[in-house]
Image 1 (spheres, rainbow, N blue to C red):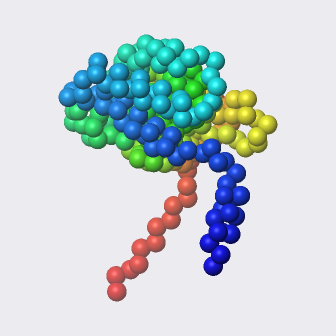
Image 2 (image 1 turned 120 degrees about the vertical axis):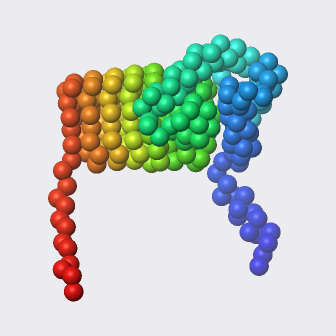
Amino acid sequence: MDKKKIISELNRHKKLPHLDFRLKQDTEDFTDTLFYTLFDSNTPVAVNLELLEKKFNDLLDMACWELERPNNELWDEYVSHLPEILEKLNLDAEAILNCDPASLSLQEIYMAYPGFYAIAIYRLAHELYVQGVPLIPRLMTEYAHRQTGVDINPGAKIGKSFFIDHATGVVIGETAIIHDNVKIYQGVTLGALYVAKNLEKTKRHPTIKSNVTIYANATILGGDTVVGENSIIGGNAWITSSVPPNSTVYHTPEIKIKTTPNV
C-alpha cells in the first residue's frame, strides 16, 4: 500500500476543501441552546442571549460568506423577532392540546411531541432564512428532521396554530404556504409535481388554506395546487389539482377479506 499516494489522491478529490463540518455541529449546539432559552424554566434568558449572539457570530464567520449586513445587525434583527416566534409556538402547542385527545398537558407537548419540536425549529430557522442567512437555517431544520422524521424546509410559510400529529414522515417543501389552524398527520407530503433545477425560483409546492385537515400519507403536489378552506383530505389521497373550499377528498382502496373456514 502506497500510503502517500492514497493521501494525495484523497486530497485531490476533495472538491470542497473549505467544507468545515464544525459548522454543522455548532449549528446543532446553537439550535439546542436557542430552544432551551425559549422554553426551559431553569435557563436564564438574559445570560443565554449573550451566549447565543457569540455562537451566532461564530457560525457566520465559519460559513465564510459575504453578507450585506454586519453580524450584529443580523443578530439584533433576529432577536427582535423571538417574542413573536415564541408567541406563535405557544399557539401551536395550544392547538395540539385542543385537538389531540391523547395530550394530557402543555408540558407534555413541549417536551414529548416530535411534531411540536419540528415546528419550533422550523419557526426559529425560518426567520434566519427570511433574513438571507445561508445554509444555517437548513442545517437547523435538518437537525430537527433527523430527530423527529419531519422534514420542513425553512423557506416554507406556515401560519398560526399549526398541528402535526404523530409527525413521522412529514415533508413540507420550500415554497409551500400553509395558512392558519391547519392539522396534518404522519406521512403527509406537500411536494413539487416534478423536479427540475430551472424551477428554483418558482412556486413548486402547494398552498393549504385555513382550517384544513390532511390525514395520514396524503400527497399533495404542485405550486398551482390550492386546498380550499375547511377542507378535509383523507388518508392516502394523491392530489395534483386544486380542491374547492369545504370539500372532502378521500381515497377508496379495494379491501378483500377471506376467512378460512374452521377445520
